[in-house]
Image 1 (cartoon, rainbow, N blue to C red):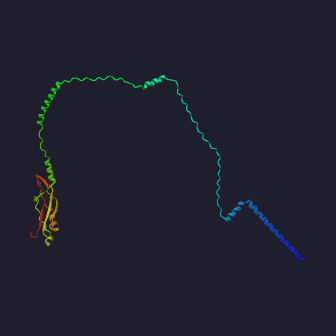
Image 2: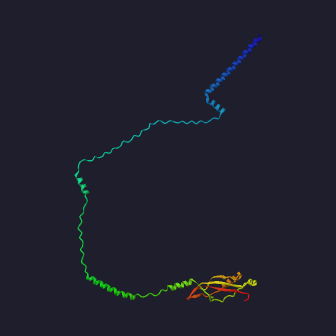
Image 3: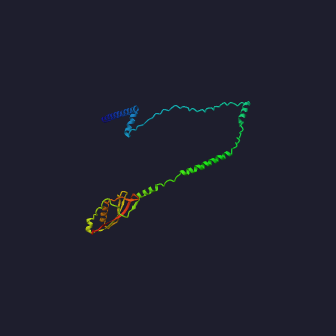
Length: 262
């Protein structure tokens, strides 16, 4: 009996615990449901935070405009101009004026009278012509006496003189020296080596006798002797060459000899 009593007590005690747990679960579920009913956005936010990051959603509110009926453009009515109807009455004055205006205007010209030629006297003209011919014959010999032959112009002479001044005259003889001819300088090196020969120089003078051109026409065979001949001839001074009492340009050649015997 004691064993049965203990078993009953234990079973009743377990039944009370189960009832408490069931009641607690029912109350907690009810509280959660009530909280979800009053705060649904918080629950959704919790789900978004747990599963995926929240995204922004843009909402644009467009207000629709009231519909306005389109107005149909009416075509303007054509304006009819009132034209004056021509009068059917006959106007005789207008017809006469038009007929008169169409006719050509004729102007009367006065008759042209041709002048009659006057008779010309014949005998007086013959006498006048005879007098004029006599005057012409008298004037002609007077003009012949006045006209004299012109003297010969001096232009050809001047041209000849000018051409002589510009031309270079070839001279066969040596022009006159203004100063004594300087002594020939024989190079010492050429003497020691036994150089000797004749150098022919060509000299050109202007109108005043000054040397304008000096060159070797024929070499002696040694450059030292040719240079000595040129330096010696460059010191020469000449009188101007005369042709027809006028100074002219001249050209001539001079031989310069280098000899060890002299």
